[in-house]
Image (cartoon, rainbow, N blue to C red; front, side):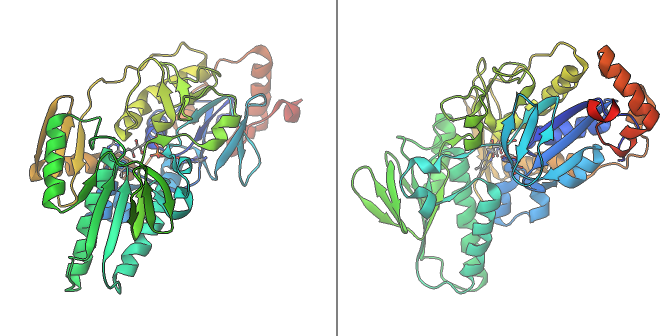
Length: 431
Ligand SMILES: Cc1cc2nc3c(=O)[nH]c(=O)nc-3n(C[C@H](O)[C@H](O)[C@H](O)COP(=O)(O)OP(=O)(O)OC[C@H]3O[C@@H](n4cnc5c(N)ncnc54)[C@H](O)[C@@H]3O)c2cc1C
């Protein structure tokens, strides 16, 4: 879609191409707000859909099946796409500081940058373990490991540190794939060992007993060694050192522990929670700065605490889009109500999945097919983009309320046709 022929009166800047922002882009594409320009800043051009990531690792999906092409989606939404990393904010000037490009001005800002395991809290982990996020880093490591399997000889022990659903699901997917890689080369799989190191007394602590017992059975059948009450205190070269004094040599160590916020947020002055995530109100607006919104893992809803999960990031997309739109128009924001119970469909690598919702848990191959259907439908929304020829935003008047000075500038901008190139016209240019 082309840039609207409207002058740009308000800038909405989105940092991160997470699950919420892809929803925002889609909504603005289908229903643009005249006078508003969107800019997406993301360090990756392709963003992974977390629900399908284990299926990609297991070998059921190709890279493109589980990634959304952000540059294409941004183009579809008439948004600018800057492939860059946000490294700070100048809130007084209303600018995003980027690693490689000049600061990007905003009127409203939204942050959806996800979270990553707090690997630096354990000595040696950053040097000797691979965090599951950023996914691009994990994926690079994973593809190298797969390549090494072609001539790997002898035993290979893989450890996951963390006993949450994400870690368990990832380990089972890796096991399925690595065993298949060896079998396809007529090689023995008995040298492959898989281990979970979990500081808590049970795996999947946020799920119900039925789900936990389904997983306990699957893990036992698949020969995965589960070490509960096993806090990793230190990591050295290929070795986990536990709090109980034991040492466990491992070939691969993956870190999937509780996630936290990016370091650069600490210098923004925004109020953060104990794990470094941005505290937001029910309108998904920062408690500190009304011009800044946050969604997904990086946001902590202070009045509705919820688990960090992709499902919430996805659900927050529509209310976030609505509130960004309302904020630029100067309209009152709408509260978002987060669901209390949510459905998690957790796969076990071998086209089998376990469903978890509140106190309910059930499992089967059909659950995997159901999950696959839901996930594919989600991806279709972002990959099957209809042709957009009608420039809706350019053909209707601006919906942005301007003060007198801004209105005068806008009229000048129209006269000069400055907005046609998509450039925001600053007061210094016009005066
Ligand atoms: C193995 C695994 C499986 C999972 N499976 C599920 C599941 O089935 N269902 C579920 O609900 N949850 C699942 N989760 C949890 C889920 O991954 C997260 O909750 C979800 O990804 C959070 O989405 P998000 O939109 O907040 O951020 P993300 O999806 O992490 O996206 C963040 C984006 O921001 C970009 N970015 C980051 N920092 C910057 C920066 N400084 N500047 C610019 N761009 C930046 C990144 O490149 C990325 O595009 C799983 C997690 C793991 C580890």
